[in-house]
Length: 287
Image (cartoon, rainbow, N blue to C red; front, side, top):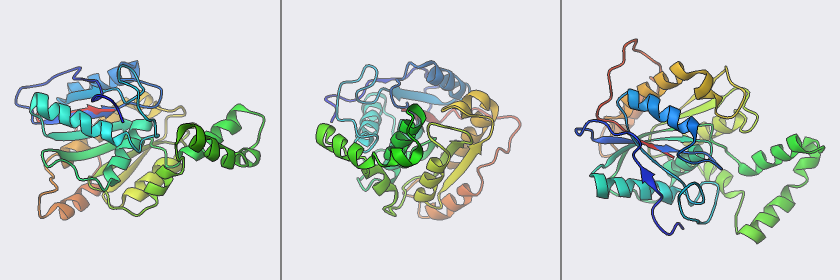
């Protein structure tokens, strides 16, 4: 557990009438000051989003804490929302996460833990989440050593054992969560990159399936490196996310017709405007 709430810095603020905040979640070995996230925040800010961003435990300016590839880090998300609620009187959130942050936000979506009644999450955008970190690690061994994929897979028992003994970390837990058939709480937009060699598209596709019918999968073709979806498809990327949050911002888990609305939203994640109006009541959280 982190010793204090993660450092939260609203890099840009919007109108005082804003009632929604967007939370942006960064990737592994990164932090909220990375140029990739700063550029993305600027794009969201131009759409009228208000932004809350913070560093996960063991990253950037945050304190140390147990690293679990996203399992325990859902508490960092809740700590950030609590901070915004207590210090800025904000209780409505949208979430965008990349890689490690995308996986964490997807686990948060499936978590059985009760969310504070003060908080309303309108939706989650998860850019290239990993379904199984062990699989990603083994693939990295294949890419970085002379071992082929068959020989690399033979290392799996040793990797599992050593991470458990030395780090008290169960590498199979995330895959188990995604395969547990739990019901997602919030609508999701899952993003994949066709030639991503770090987190291949099979991972976000499986995460999308695990999240169920209220999740939509979107794949970008003009990308090869991890994070290229935004870098090389900026206009379409921003348009899709704008539409997603525009469609979901009025949804509430307390609405008796929420499931019908979610079904409608899940079928309607296409860009349908040529001139976008600012979403001045939206706050975005970046992790």
